[in-house]
Amino acid sequence: MTAPDLKTPTDLKSNQTKSVADALNGALADSYALYLKTKNFHWHVSGPHFRDYHLMFDEQATEILATTDLIAERVRKTGNTTLRSIGDIARHQSVKDNDAEFVSPADMLKELRDDNLALVETFRAVKAAATEAGDNATEGIVDDWTDQAEQRAWFLFEAARGA
Image 1: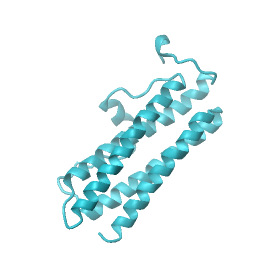
Image 2 (image 1 turned 30 degrees about the vertical axis):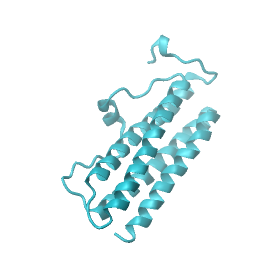
Image 3 (image 1 turned 90 degrees about the vertical axis):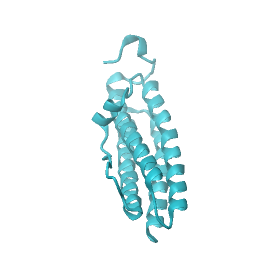
Image 4 (image 1 turned 45 degrees about the vertical axis):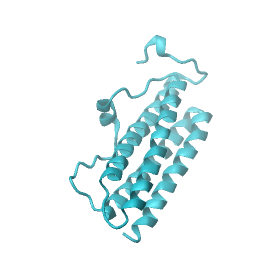
């Protein structure tokens, strides 16, 4: 339950915004998990394509991190609260962590591609919840996040062709 002093005014019904907030918080958790995995691979990539992959992973991580603030702020604008800790993220994320000591560059590309495509599915669920709730603002902004994740997946797919 949202504390009364954190209850942001909105014309949307609270039972409708709760489903949108839940979907957004899932997307937020997955975005943080994907951000950290992308940075992990950025730090640990090796091999003949090191520079290209290192730079691409860093660019993608920066884009993902920028989206997290927009997602969290959208949750707050709907009168709800968002994730508060690493533990909270872990409880909500569906993107799996990768704690392996070594991951080949080809496997990094494939795993990040698959995770970005999974994030696209999560964003589509956010869009569906927003549509059902009549939350036009969330409906509109999630399209940009979906497009960004699709573009990241495309770049990873194309880079993996030569890996």
